[in-house]
Length: 460
Ligand SMILES: NC(=O)c1ccc[n+]([C@@H]2O[C@H](COP(=O)([O-])OP(=O)(O)OC[C@H]3O[C@@H](n4cnc5c(N)ncnc54)[C@H](O)[C@@H]3O)[C@@H](O)[C@H]2O)c1
Image 1 (tube, rainbow, N blue to C red):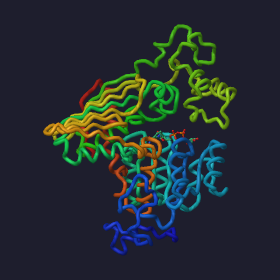
Image 2: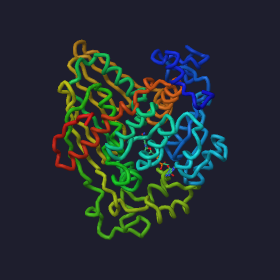
Image 3: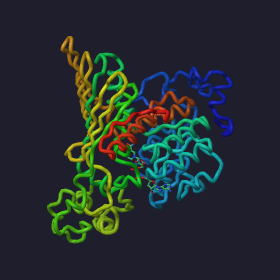
Image 4: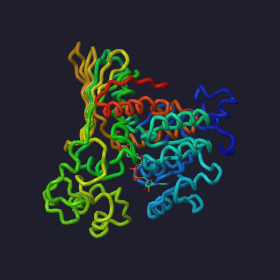
C-alpha cells in the first residue's frame, strides 16, 4: 500500500490469494479487528495501516462517518476534506489534523491532484453524488457513497458501470444493514426458523417534526433538487426488505400524495415565514420559532457556527427553515404505500407515514412456521409448532453509533473491505443496492401513474 500505483487487489491477484480473502500485506493475519464491541468475526483483520479517506461534504453524515477515525485511529485516517462552509471545513480540518494543502472548498478541487488516499467519502447533497462518484472512480478511488446513489436510474447504472470499469469498491450507505437489530432479523429470516416467508408488513413512521424539518423545509423537500421520498427516505426500507427476503422483486404498485403540507391547507392569515408575525404561530404544531429557537432542536442543517437566539432568529428570517410549512416549494409526498411482489409469491406492503409522534421502523414478517414482530427496540420471534417465543433486544450494541449502531457498523465493514480489497466484506455494495433503488424509481413511476402495476427487470 506504500506504492500508490500498485493496487492491493493487484497484489492479491498476482499471488493468487484474492479469492481466499487472505491479505498478504497484513502482518497480523488471523488477528481480529481492533473494534471489539460489535464484531467478533475472524474474517475481520487489523489493517496494517489505517485506510486513508477524504471526506467530500463535511456536514452531518461526513462527520458521523469520519468520527470512526477518532474512535479507531489504527483502522481509518481522514487525510483530506472538501467543504464550502468555512467553519465546517476549519473545524473538521482541525479535528483530523488535515494539512492545509488537503483542505478544499469544493469537491472538484480534491480531484485536481493525483490520487493520494485510498477512498473518498461522498456525503454531499443528493444532486452531488453522480458526477463526483464518476470522477472519483475514474481516479481509482474506492468510495463510501451516501444514498440515494444518484437522482435517476440511468445515473445509478452509469455509476455501477464505472465501478466495474475501474474495478473499484463502492459501498452505499444503507446503514440499516449494519445495525445489530437488522442483522439479527436477517439471521432469523435466513435460518429457516420462520419457515418460508409468505409476506411482510413494514411501516416507516417518519415522525411529523422530522418530516417538517427534512422533507418540507429542508434539503429533501423537492424531488427535483434531491430525489422522491421513496428514494431519499425510504430507499433504506426497500433495501432492507430486499435484503431480508433475499429474492428479487418482480412487481410494484404505489399510491401516495402530498396531502397536508400544501398552500391549500395554509390557515387564513398565515404568513410566508413564521417570523413574519403569523397570527397562528403560537398554536402551530410546526412553528419554526418553537422548534429551532425555543426548543433548540434540529439545528444542524441551519449551518450556524454559533447557536444563540439571535443567530437562530436571523436564520429563520432568511433561510429555508423559517418558512411556513404551508407556503413552500416542497413537492415530496407525506404519505405513500407501496405493494411489492417478490419471487415465490412473497408479498410486501410498505407504508411511509409522516404523521406519527414516533419514528423507528415497524416490521412484521409472516412465515409458514413462525412470525416476527419488531420495532427496532425489541424483536419477538414466535415458533408456531412449540409456541415458544424469543424476545430479542439489540441492547448495548445499538448504542455503538447513530442509526442503531449502523453508522459505525458500515464504516467498519467499509474499512475492512478497502483494507483487504475484498468487497464481499460489505453487504451494501453498489451491486447489492441497485435493485432496491430500482424498486424506488418504479414505485415513484407507478404512483405518478395512478398506481399502475409495473414490472421490475434489473437488467433493463
Ligand atoms: N444514510 C443515511 O441514513 C443518511 C441520513 C441522512 C442523509 N443522508 C444522505 O447523506 C447526504 C448528506 O446529507 P447530510 O444530512 O449530511 O447533509 P448536510 O447538509 O449536513 O451535509 C452536506 C455537506 O455537503 C457540503 N457541500 C455542498 N456542496 C458541496 C461541494 N460542492 N463540495 C463539497 N461539499 C459540498 C455542504 O456544505 C454540507 O456541509 C445526502 O445525500 C443525504 O441524502 C443519508
